[in-house]
Image 1 (cartoon, one colour):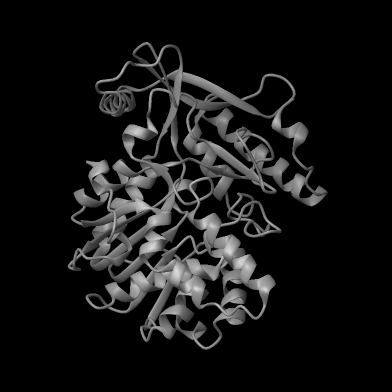
Image 2: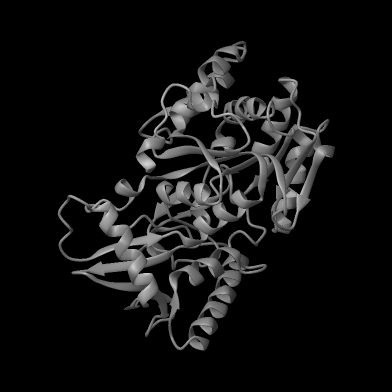
Length: 397
C-alpha cells in the first residue's frame, strides 16, 4: 500500500490542477529524453506558475493546511526573534527583509514585538513572488498589526543591497535538491521518469556527471572520515540551490545580520553512514510521508539542511558567523520562558494553549532539537543574545 492509498483524496478542482501539473512535468521529461533531475521535478512541483504548491492559492499553513510552522504555533516565537533583531538594530539600520513569509504571521509578530521594544523597523520588506501568498500576508498584517502594516513592502526579487536584518524561517528546506545514490564508490544521480504503466512518475538513476560525482564523493569522504562506509545503497541529497541562495544574500548584505531557522544537521550528522535513505519528506494534510510523486502541486516536498554547507557558503561570501544552536536553546536565550510567564493567566484555556505551544517549540521530541538557528553578519558585533549560553558553531567547521 502506497501513500496515495492512505492519504485523503483532494477535492475535484485540486485533483484537476494536480493532473494538469503532472502533464506539464511529463512533457518536460519527454522533451529531456525521458529523464530529469529530481531538483527540476521538485522545482516544478513546488513553484510551477499557477500550479506548483507554493504558486497556487491553496491553504498551506496552520490547522486548515498541510503543516504548522513555529509562528503559527505561538506569538512567543516572533517575540523571541524580535529581541534578537532589536539587538542587531543597535549596529545596523532598523529594517527587516523576510523571505518565505508564509501566512504573514511572523511578520505581524515581529512588527508588533519590535514596536513594543521601541525598535519598530522603518521598513519591513517581504520578498514574495506568489500572488495568493501576498494576499494572505496582507490580510494577516491588516488584522494583527494594522498600525504598522503601512511599513511593509512586497518585493518581486532579491534587493541588490541589504542593510538591516534578513530573516528566513523554514525557507531553505523547500529549495530544490539534487538526489544521489552511492553504491561501492560509484555515484548515480537520482532523477525522475514517467512510470511505464498506469501514469505517474518514479525514481530513475543515471550515472552522475563527473562534476556532480566529484562533489558527492568529496562530501561523503568528509562526513565518513574515520568511520566504516555503509554497505549497499546509500541515498541522500545535495542542497546546491540553498547554498547558492545563502551566498547570494550574503554578498548583498552590506551591513547587518542574517538569521535562518530550519531543520537539519551539521554535515557529519546529515551524511551519517546509517542515514542511508536521505531526508526527503512530504507534507499533506498534516501527514508526513516519503512519496514525492503523490498529487504533484498539492503537497509540500522538503529536504533537511546541511548547515555545514550553509555556513561555508555564507563565510565564503564574506559574512562573519554569529552563532549556531538548536532552536530550543536559541529561544531560551532570547527569553521565551520569561515571555511565557508574562502572559496573563485570567484565561486558563488560552494560557494552557501557549504553554503547550512553548513545549512544542522547545522539546527535543518536537521542534526544539531538530530545528536549528544560525546567524551571520557584516559589521555587527559577535555578541548575539540568542547564542549566549551555548554556541555550537564549532560543529560546522
